[in-house]
Length: 420
Image 1 (cartoon, one colour):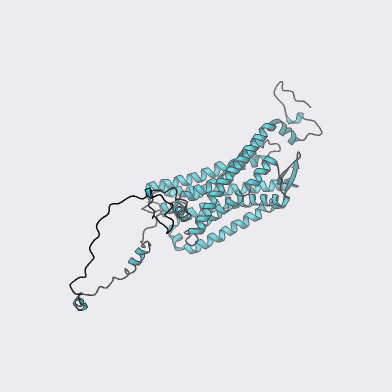
Image 2 (cartoon, one colour):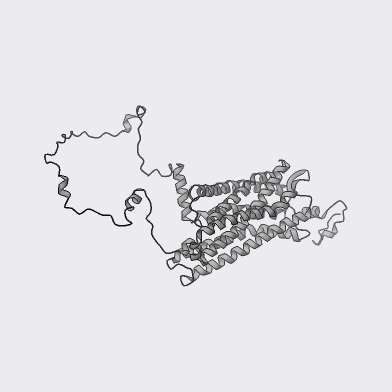
């Protein structure tokens, strides 16, 4: 059957070939050509490699700082959720090299590795979405009930650990259909790692991902809207600190707006395409699949920046880590460093590199004092010094570079920021 383009009007029902399916017709009509397909695949593979490098570096840095400097001083449930979120994003990004090869060359690995890749993708996608919702709930509770949060801090930290374990368990249960039916499928002579054997399973997995995304979006938008409303209202609202400055509140509001916008911009297009593919009987989405999937993976690179790098506490931890690993040696040449000269190693240095100094006459030797030392009996009339109560430990604290404890009011505008 040959189409007639005289009037430019045609329908899929015009195809009556017995050996042509509807999917083949759609691919022929609106799918890209071979050259365009190769270009799109090459671009997506390149983006996968770039996202992999940036995302792994950022999330690994987050995990390293938490393991070294925050392991014993977690302040809130958000600290726990951020650690698990970085771990979920890192595990998800580790599957990108395999998916990049699958996109450009087809699946050239074994079937068990295909199942592991699909399992890692779905497991960490579900856990990441749910952890984002948990972070928004914790931020809302902190702003709405600050005194209760301080009073029940230890219990909330334990609850955060249990919640994280529950999130991973729920993500695993939701990933069971994907793991069960994932395998290598041959299409057009090329092998791909897909969900096979059951169209109903594809529909179930797509609907599950859409549901988790929808619930997470509703929770995030609701919680951050309430937090923004309370911070915008100022000190008059219940639970807000009177010492929270307007500039800090504005920075917090901008951060929360960025969280919601980035989450929706990078994850919503892929979910919409997935919904159309599931709802429509015929939907041409080859190009949209590549673009929206790349956007969804890009969100994993931005999470460390939005949730942790914008916090002063994380920046201090990064500086500590950089100093410990000598990464800032070439960046801080202006910092004075002691000159260490080893014995027997100076002969290789040119003598012109040492400055010459004028010679001075030697000083005469010191003579002993002629006056006898003061006897101890002369100090008996002095009043002995008695240190004040609760202040005898201050010299030791100052010499050990510790900070004196100071009671300050609870600042909600500062506590509502991420990466504390």
